[in-house]
Image (tube, rainbow, N blue to C red; front, side):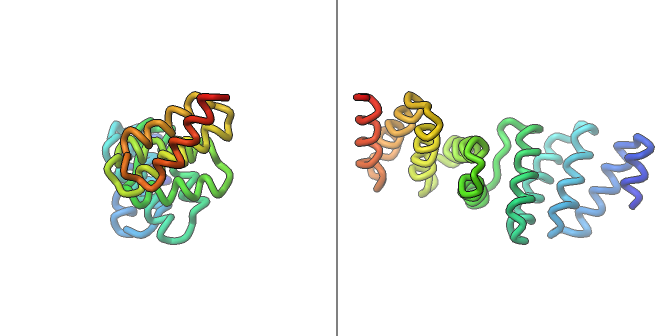
Length: 173
């Protein structure tokens, strides 16, 4: 591929142009968008790289390639500390990370979801997952704070009573 030849020559701008064309020609190819994101970064196109990473992950999730989507998500987090997807994809990815026993990345994904999508119907549940993950990791103060935030920020949530009780237990012990 011409983009790879450009990379071997050290021509990042040429590679960016070629990989951009390739990704546009294959809108459902998650790997093409991931490669475009990677070459966009050294060219200074951080906004383009962010969008390409988002498209890549969403394509990979749609294609049922969850493991690869998680890998690209971790890669995107290295490039962008505040990286996030649309609400549905972010929550889906966070659930998957937790199920796949990647609690530290899942925690970051849930926290990002709550930070950006705090008015979403699943925000209280995502914050509950944050609290539970902190509790499992032995961070009792962080867990208690997250439980208290459910009560304070989402008083009408179905999780409020549960969070109140868990926060109380963590405060006592």
